[in-house]
Image (cartoon, rainbow, N blue to C red; front, side, top):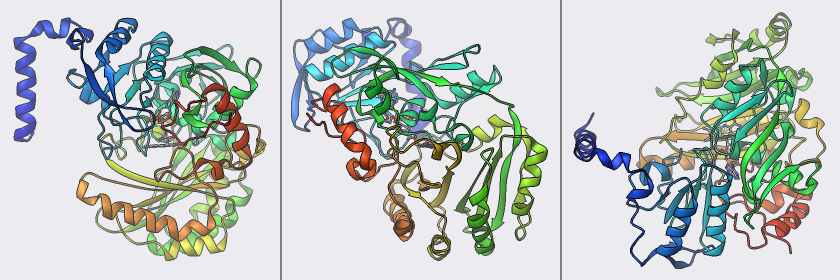
Length: 495
Ligand SMILES: Cc1cc2nc3c(=O)[nH]c(=O)nc-3n(C[C@H](O)[C@H](O)[C@H](O)COP(=O)(O)OP(=O)(O)OC[C@H]3O[C@@H](n4cnc5c(N)ncnc54)[C@H](O)[C@@H]3O)c2cc1C
């Protein structure tokens, strides 16, 4: 522990020891709301406004969860999201404990014309779940997942994390598609599409979404399914956080054998051509049970590697046979593929993508893994431990859903490429971002469209949603005509 940390901890411990009743008073008691003044805030359009403390007190009284201003003991931890690059200070944070709290917070934002950020799991790469001067609606306490094993359904709170979803389902020998870092939020992940290691077999997260409970801009709680509200049900399956705050997600689960063939095969960078050229042909005919995608990384010592992450969710004997040709490429330096618990794979990247890392990312959809793309991947590789190229394999069940059956627009992509990197020091921001952008721009001619959830540079949503955009804009016009939910890959309301 360094001196600063030591001092902070000692002071905190000292304060807690001296004022033990502070903790017992509860969160609400620490907020100064009895003075009839206002606090500075930011409006929906970005202009400066004042929020009456009386209105904040009214919100505080109506909510079961705490409303935190800057002087609240938990304010700093509450405003902190996963990506350390986004150090923003909301005017107030409403930590919701239930749907009624969400209704109150949404109504407060609307009635007071204050900028609104919605935080699920807090993993927004571009930092959309926190805002400067606005209201941060914090769902982190709505994090439970319940499973109805008989109906094969999971009910996940709007602020739950993927590890809670995976673990709750696995307890019953069931599963649904979840992403590759277990501390990512179910909320943002699902609403944007939801790629994971089982998506070739079971589809994206949105393909398993049977319904949501959502609070819309008018403060109403709606139970949305294909039957009750086909438009909104369609829109939340890919349209991101544009339509309201989801307080509960209902997922379809599938029978699952949690021990499966999985791991990574790693080659030195000088074998990259053999590996990628082989993959380009071999990946065309993959069975749905096999998820395998390339990544190109630079180790801290500057050594480059190309690797394939493998998950085979069928009979392991069959999987071993299918993987033989891949394993016979060149001379791998590591091969960890073996029979292991699914959660080993699902948590293996948790530490590398730990909270507080400063991170930048771009993404692009690849329809065909062509020779041109292989050449460009090889030619554009520059050793830099700050920048890596990952992929999410799609195809299979993902591509069997019609282009306009959900609001997720990239059904014909075989692969999503993710250009991402992380570092701890702010001084690396410019260099790290430049390295990632260079790698992205070199491959841009081979990609079309991006992942809504990885929209760092504010790319317009309209082109990316293509033919789905008009319907999205009309639904947005119906449920959020004033664009209250705008901190996202924003769909402009069509009225
Ligand atoms: C380390 C890391 C790993 C990732 N891995 C994957 C992966 O394997 N597959 C994949 O598809 N994506 C992955 N992503 C991208 C991920 O899908 C998005 O970052 C997603 O937004 C995270 O959701 P969240 O709830 O944690 O985010 P938050 O930061 O909480 O929210 C992001 C946005 O989502 C919306 N939102 C969140 N929850 C709700 C809700 N309950 N109701 C309404 N709107 C809500 C809001 O608009 C919010 O601004 C990863 C991201 C990171 C940082």
